[in-house]
Image 1 (spheres, rainbow, N blue to C red):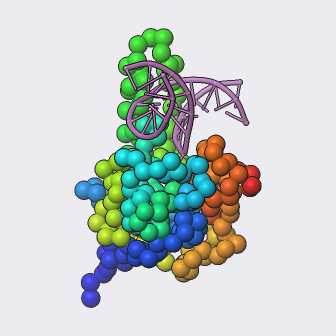
Image 2 (image 1 turned 45 degrees about the horizontal axis):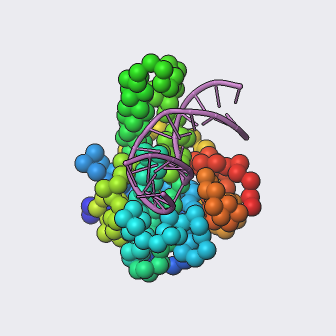
Image 3 (image 1 turned 90 degrees about the vertical axis):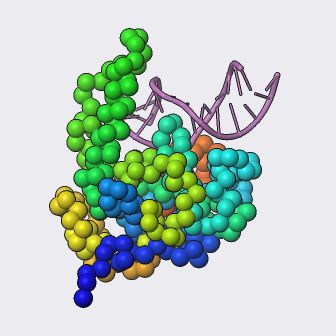
Length: 264
DNA sequence: CGCCCGATGCTCT
DNA sequence: GAGCATCGGGCGG
């Protein structure tokens, strides 16, 4: 009897999962496994933070003022990726609700589990590229910075903490905008009942975090997270609709982008 | 065409 | 916690 591969063990969530209110999807995304497969292999992590961008009365929603080239994916079927760029960085959403209803859940942070070394390499590469460009700037531009710890050894905690950082770590870019998350292959989301075993089986470079913020329930993780383990706050970085409590995160996880953000 | 402004990340105070 | 790099999208002229 052959041992199941990580891909076989973690099939994509069905479209019905995404065909619901963005708030429900964002909340239920917590604890799920986000998987990315490239020619370099599998990189994946556990979602610990997500935000909802709802279809009505949400001026922070990119689709609030109608359909454009950039946000077209949000108007498509649920279960597809909406990948957009901001400040020269990529961010990943899962599109929610039926065709024509533009809503999505922004995945803001993951706990790295599989392919951690690959994630580090990608993050370092990006940081070095940025530094190189910065160094090439003519005098009088931005200051050079000799000490940049993040280049040499990006801490595990910072590998995928934040929507753009996780996209870097998982090699997610605009080419994946519109990608169907329910087909697997390149990018998908799965139940995470045995992430630890899966990570070990995949030889995740042995650099697992020792115990950072784990809740001890990792052996047999339930389909949905214990509601008590889910925190809620305003969304990060948005100015419009600043007061809506649409950010959800795993309480106590060190991999959440901004643990201390005050609740609404 | 020009101008404004971020669903960010990094650094230093 | 505040400031800044940086660049494409969106909108007004």
